[in-house]
Image (tube, rainbow, N blue to C red; front, side):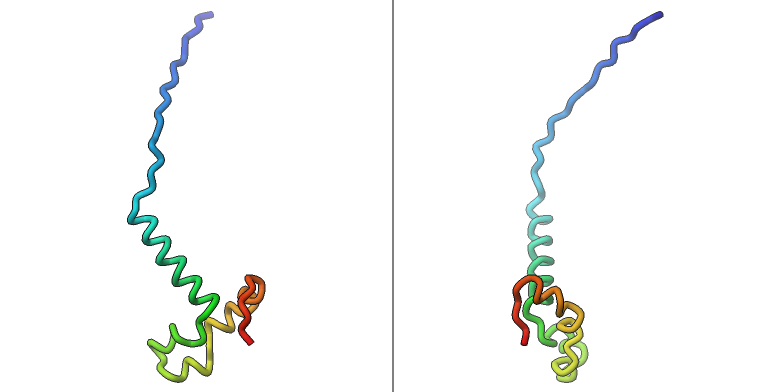
Length: 74
């Protein structure tokens, strides 16, 4: 039997995350944080107008998540 030696090449990466990616993720986190924690119709009021404050779609969709994360809403 013939045995061959297997060589492995290891590459070491620097592991740096691009600053643009971090900025985009922080903006998305901020929008999500506002939508879950504080929105009372403000986001949909950009499209629906004053009617959105009465319907509060995002508030109702994230209601249980608000209470689970400690945000009081009523």
